[in-house]
Image (cartoon, rainbow, N blue to C red; front, side, top):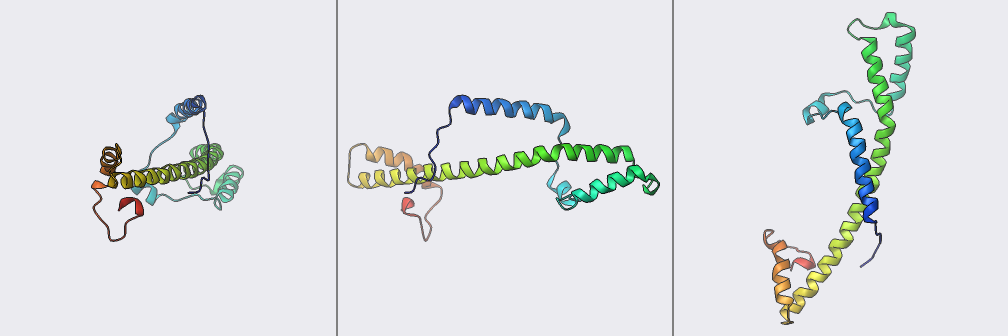
Length: 159
């Protein structure tokens, strides 16, 4: 069993992060919205390649407003551009943080689960050999697998 990660995060650091996230959430909450999956599907998406295009259009719309369609208010267009320009750097930072956090949670969870399965298998073998206390522990831990039923090919821990 390989141990790829071994970290101890002080509780005060975790609490400080939670507090900071609550502050960030509180600051941004009045400005953020939640879209339905259908809304997300229907919207035009401004990807990285479109960002410079929109920036140029914003410049032209200000210097040459005669080409602006009457149904496109420049003030609203500018508000949207300023909002996306301000939020994108924050979004990118949060994406990087989320990716690293996800990877760390996945790896630490995997290692904890793998070690737990090893313990479970050890207890299971001990219970078969009637080692004191093993049967009680095995019966308690085996509840995790009850609802799954038997598969044709099961991992070692589930046999």
